[in-house]
Each structure stands twice: as structure tokens, then as C-alpha cells.
Image (cartoon, rainbow, N blue to C red):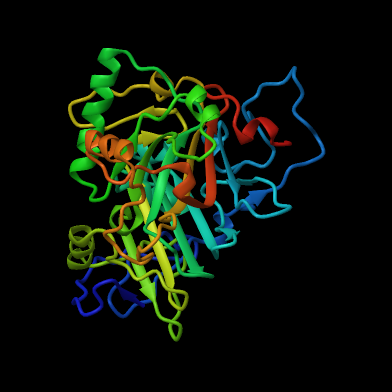
Length: 380
């Protein structure tokens, strides 16, 4: 296993005690194998729809489901649906704090593990250190969630990779809310090289635009720089198991975030293991938290009842005469209107739908706070 900066010396970490009853998410020494979560804490990682359909008389959100994790009932209101966008596939419900979920789309294959902070992590109970490794893991950290991914590409991405957070229907913001949102976006941009955002084009503009030169309301994070950890494992080595704490040296993290785009060679031979975590969004309560200088607020106060979709995609340049498709400096748009819009947003280029090669979609909704989206069609 090697990190992005493979020659960086690995520093020592303290090793948490491991017993037969508690193989927790584990920080390993340099020469010690990382240990996955104990299987006794797992339930089925994903579920497929049953024959029961949601009727007009039922809530449009996913609500309660028998396919939730019985060890963490506080997570039941959160509905997470994975869509690989492949022919004949249907959205699959992903159960947090469970076994890794297999993922296979046209562009890559692998698995993902979603961890959400249990309520017990905020209670000082020594018993948690013995019976619940996930709670114990979050108890020593402020983060509210952690997503781990491990994949191999089937073909090399044709443009920079992004993790987008979007809503399907644009929302109107008054002056005060827009100032508030812009403050948060400025905070995000300061620590994320390659960050892009758009308030989106209205539905009427989209309906008149057959060329796809419009944007949805979204935040977009360059995968090379936004992931908290990226490990690259060559073919002759075994990648770390998901459910372990992933190690990447500080020098490696700093270098790829400074380099930005093209800091990672997304090839088809290596295995890429990544994680992303945050202390600022609590999915189970559908609220923000721990934002510096800001009080917690409900996501619905900005989003309304819309679900949130996380999508992975490559921003692929459209073909133009006499241009090199592999040029890292190439503009995705070349009209005067596009250039003016790009300069105004201080982001170049815009993420037009026509230029997005979407790999997967991961929809987050809440039983009482959101409606519509894929969860409306999900058969419980």
C-alpha cells in the first residue's frame, strides 16, 4: 500500500486495544495490518425494493423501513439511495454503519462504506468502548460522518473528477439568505482548491436549452484535493479494508491539495481507497453543526423539502476543431457569453450538464424533512 507521496516516511500512531469482542476501526502502526470492524456489528449493507409501492396516500419520503440498521434506530429517518445509472438497474438503499456496499457502474467497480455518528457517541459511557466499535470511533472525534470508497477504474477518466452536491430544483434566496450562504461558500472555498459552485439556472431556462449549457444548483469538489485521505495500491499489493482508519501522510495531503487538478493519476491498474468526513452536517437531524461563528440551522431552511444528491462525475471537454482533448488548460466553453459568466462567478469553467459525464448518484433524504427524488419511487 502506498499513498500519493510514496516516499514520505510514515509516522507512528497510537494503537487502540483490540479484543475478540472489539475489533474497532483501527489505527495501525507502520508494520501492523489494519483491522476491520467486527462482523457482529454488521447488518445487510444494502436492500432492494420489495413489491410494495408508495401510493399517493403515503409520504413521499422514504420513512421507516425494515431495511434499516437495528443497532442504530436513530439513523432510521435517513434514506440513502445509490443509483449506478446502468441499464436495467434500479436505486439500491444503502444502510449506514453496516457492511461495505458493492458498487459497479460503466466507469469503475468497487465498494463503499457510509458511517454516521450514533447518538451514543455523545454519551460518556465506558460500555461503548467494549460493545460498539463504531460509537467508540466517533466518540474520540468531532466528525458527524465518514464515507469510505474503494474502486478500480474500468477506463481512464476523460476529464477532472468531481464530487458534486446538487439539488434538482433551484431555490430562491432573499438578500439576507444569499449573504449568509455566500459566507459559508467563502469558508468552503478557502480550504478547497478547485471548489466550484453555482446557484443554478431556473427551470424555464433549462426547458428552452436543448444544448445542455445550463447548471443545476450545486457545489462541486475536485476529488484530487477534497478527499481527506487517498491511498493508491498497486496491482501486486492488497488494499486496506474499508472499516479501518485510512492513513495518508501529512506531506502527501499537503502536496496534492497544493497541486490541485492532475495531482492524482486516475489509472486503470491501481486500486484507489479514499475517505471523506465532516463535522459540519448531521444527516440524522438534517441540520448543520459546529460551523465556526454560526449557529446550527436546519438544512430545510435553505433547501426546502428537496433531497440532496451526491454525484461523481468527470468534467469532459466538448470536441472543438484544432484543440487537444488532453490539454489541462483547455476551456470547456468558448463563447463570449460563457466567458463572461465564468469570470463573473470567479470559477472557470462552468459545470454545464452537457460537459458532465456522471458516474453515480447517491441521494440523501429524510423521513420528515424532505420529499420527492428517488426516495419517492423507492419500494419499501
